Amino acid sequence: MPRLFTGIEVPESMADDLSRLQGGLSSARWIDPEDFHISLRFIGDVDVRTANDVADMLYAVKKRPLEVTLSGLGSFGGDKPRSLFIEVKQSQPLMELQAEQERIMRRVGLPPETRKFKPHVTLARLGRDASARDVADWIALRGLFLSRTFFVPRFVLFSAKEVVGGGPYLVEEAYTLAA
Picture 1 (cartoon, rainbow, N blue to C red):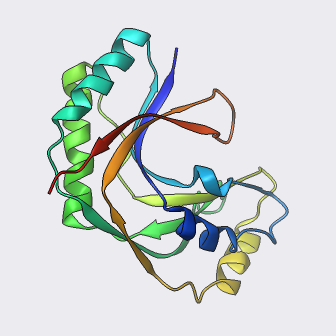
Picture 2: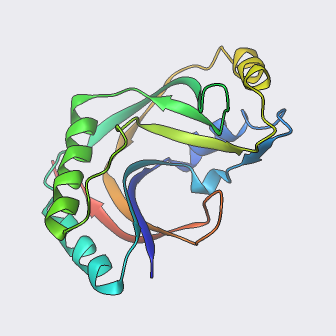
Picture 3: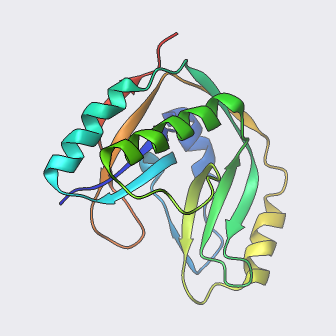
């Protein structure tokens, strides 16, 4: 069964810049820069028929190309941090693209996503020994992160191996955003 999700690729030049933020936190498992992405909709482990239905239905998405702005650093998990990420500024076109994909997944018969969509690029997954203080210090030392904007001409359907921490990710299908 393939493990699938949709997302936006981070351009190589931008991924190189982001990778320079990595390091300096012993509890982190750093994401390979070629696997940086913005998840739009996690699909999960599905049978081949459902995977094919998803891949076909995503061609129905009719949205315009958009711009994405990376805006700062953050972490998920609060007092028990579990990941470090680059924040993505929410924009109407990005939110509409994600919402359209959620509607398609529901039509395919998948359950609704229960987590609120918070667009981001994961930099690292954190081990259980990660402390909130260490993570806060790591973010503070990189607090002068300059926002960056990039053009998004397409979104993709990714597959992932069944491993903890994600990656490597494979582009199964690409969907052009039409002007």
